View (spheres, rainbow, N blue to C red):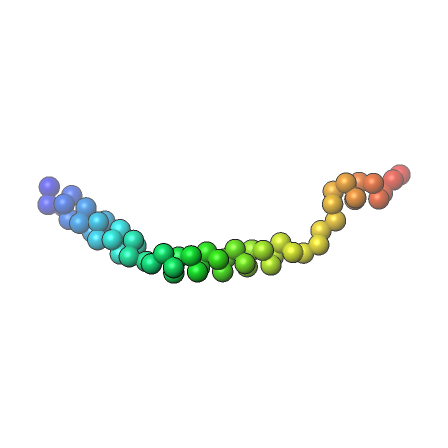
Length: 57
């Protein structure tokens, strides 16, 4: 039982450390990640239908 209790205590302590992160810090990082993803998506890609209509044999 002592080992199980020790493992639970370690797990519980780690979860408390993870939960300590403030909401504003999490929100700031998520917003930065979203902005980065949005920048990457901005590249102009031709549509699939445009490529299919462009080449006729």
